[in-house]
Image 1 (cartoon, helix red, strand yellow):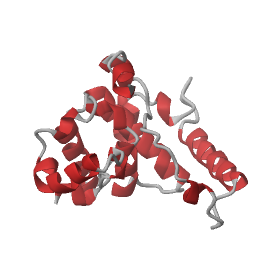
Image 2 (cartoon, rainbow, N blue to C red):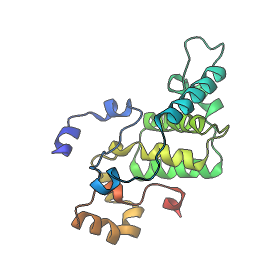
Image 3 (tube, rainbow, N blue to C red):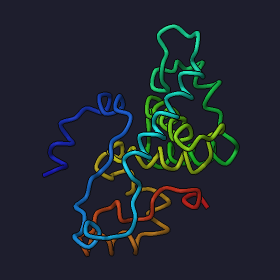
Image 4 (cartoon, helix red, strand yellow):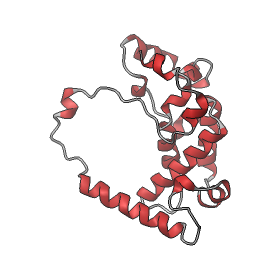
Length: 179
């Protein structure tokens, strides 16, 4: 049913959405867990700090107030990746068949994640998280069929399918994905 609706969304339209993830049902045990979780106030404080970082970054740049508004030249300046981050993003682009627009969105989201962590640099963890926020780019997971990831992890993958677990339960895209 979900795939039917996803097929109605054009690729170029989906490319223009920064974050899209599969939301799976949460088990009762997880919902009723009494372990401490991050409070809304602390999340709000992190967001305010990240916005302040962005405001400072773009001071004097007319009409630019957030990472989402960065131009390509600004991205080259503020979204520089180290070698490992570049390899990770290249691998994701190749495996998932992502577009140039998706590449730009991933960089901007990774920059925002780094700002939320009050990190000057974008790390591989930030890139990995941003890549994982692009779940629907995969054409209904069709990117897996010919991927090296599937060849390596096919038994785990098919076990997930056999037990009707969501694909999000599979190994997330991390630096280990290309080792």
